[in-house]
Length: 342
Picture 1 (spheres, rainbow, N blue to C red):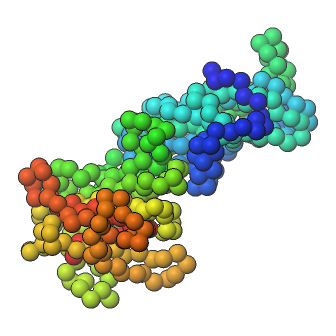
Picture 2 (cartoon, helix red, strand yellow):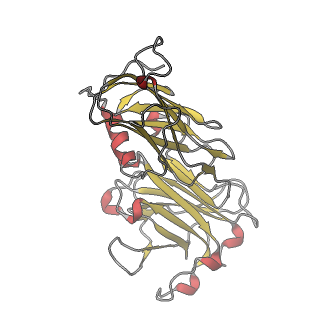
Picture 3 (tube, rainbow, N blue to C red):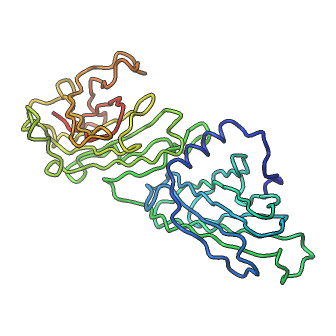
């Protein structure tokens, strides 16, 4: 049980406010609860989730529960309990104040109109799906009659979030490593190791900025034949191998950058291409435009943490150490798009 929470507490921990605001900015409600076993429908519980409808194994699932009260009289001892079988509970907040338990006190709700917003963060399992059930109870104490209107129980359910095991797809809501040490929830990937004929391409995305908190990111490894360079590109015929399709913040510029590592297996490399000669084509559509921009990334980053004036830039590329001849290149980009080898 988390400590008693009094609604309207003015002092909120700074990082909790950032997490709450950032995550709320990318989520939309996906499920509205219907009160069950309740004498009055004055409490509504809506539960939404990110990512939706799927998440990569071991990555974070963020559930937001909005509890709204519209009764005429105030109610006390309001409590919310989250349950998501098959996932590991990590942290929770109530209106930006850490609760860090699956059972959180919401304090009192005033008559007329009142609400609370809860965040419950879980780590997805290796397979299956995750559904969060949020149970909200109101009551004056253990001696209340079960028929009293102020001892109601209400439920909210999220849609099932599937655990996506497709090796060519990575889906995650990126969260800061500092809040979740040891869980690596700030990275989404399709795997950079063990590439070969059956799995020739891999991508890894890290978004190190503070704005990464609550950001939904997806990456997809696309077959070579399904990701050609545009015919308008002067060297379209030289584009080779699979593509890395990135989706972050709907294409908006990010700060400080997206860090993307792309891996090509030896079988994907065009003759004469090596870790030293490989070049990168970045294809993206700027927000508010209807045409793609094709950008060749030839600038080599001068620092491990590149300056804004260097972006976009890349590492020189390197062979993997597993002896398979895999080439890996790390890119530092301002926005998402399709990455191709050239």
